[in-house]
Amino acid sequence: MGGCAGHPKGMTSLRWLTDAEKDRLIEIALNTPEALRRLEEESHYKASVGWAAINWLKNGMAICGFDYECVDKGIPATVPESAEFYSQVEIYIGEPAYYPKYLLRVAINPDTGEVAHVQQHGLKKLPTAPGYTK
Image 1 (tube, rainbow, N blue to C red):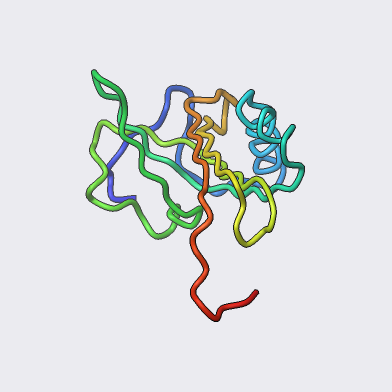
Image 2: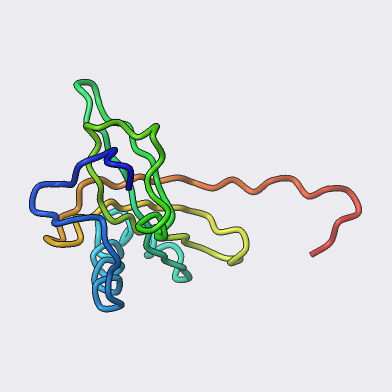
């Protein structure tokens, strides 16, 4: 992991998670007010678990997401020493599945279940190239 960042209080380490832990994190993320609000509008979703490094700043925060496999690959040296790591659940909400309407990223301490941060993004449909049909 390159010794680049710390862990949130109470989190033992950046580590492989069991399937039960991943399921629990997804359940926590799906029950945030932000996710519940979006899921009232759209019932289709896809969720996955990765990692996030959050650097808490005086005037806000900086966040960087990583693939789940970074446990083995290591953390890039660009992550500051002051950053804390959390599990990050990405939830793509809406259909069609290849182009959902919303993306939520929920940073959660995997040991305590505490939600540290939620990011919401509305995804805009890109124009279709002339002559292209789906």
